[in-house]
Length: 90
Image (cartoon, rainbow, N blue to C red):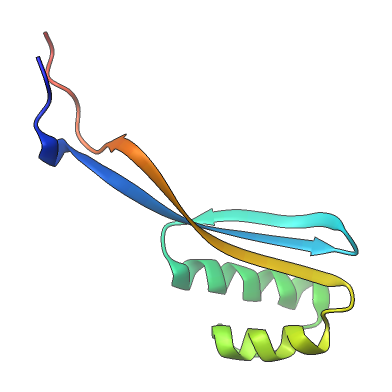
């Protein structure tokens, strides 16, 4: 028996990674882009002296001044076939 199509949706994750002098220092998977940027800002505040708001444009400007030792990646990843409801019992 096949499950109805509406039970399957793709899940979108935003993955944040920070490398400090080539060593991975922070990785987080978030459910939306805003949470990813907020997590990045929180990490940079705690460990790298960032003092700005949770806004990507401010982070980008700050990172341009500190890019000699930090490598930042925020990528969107789709996980296909994630079932959001229980399949019927057969």
